[in-house]
Image 1 (cartoon, one colour):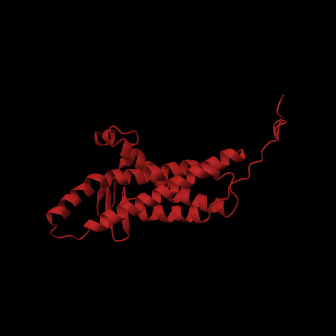
Image 2: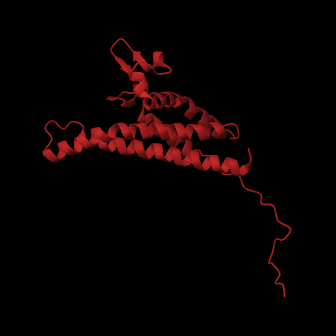
Image 3: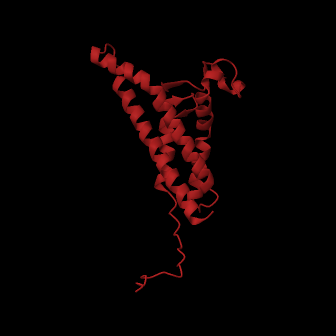
Length: 186
């Protein structure tokens, strides 16, 4: 990979990682505002309705920014040095399910009608419950997307990458034959 291409991938990976952290913080702040309100006032109720209306969009954007970060990091991982390579691989492994959840949310219209490409993977179940990968809910250990990954885990992994981010590669510029101060023609 050419240094300029490496630096471009690095730039986009960084901004998508930062965006996934930012959107996770936005969602947790919104959620915290309305959690536990037994009898909201009229204003609080209207705000909570706005939260419900926006929540799924913010969740989807967290997933989208995570997937975009993954795409650029998948290109960089082959050119990163240790320990950055190890951290990138950990991020890719930890967020792998985010791509599947994002895809299924993106095409949830087909999945809800039983026509999704991976229909057998859309519905999940355990002894306690059944869910689909488009759902979200909160448990004691975090705010889950698709009941498979928490937004806290997405943000934690993104922070790890950003804290151990590989350096940009220096670009070597070719000197042109006409480098220097141009001569004035008379």
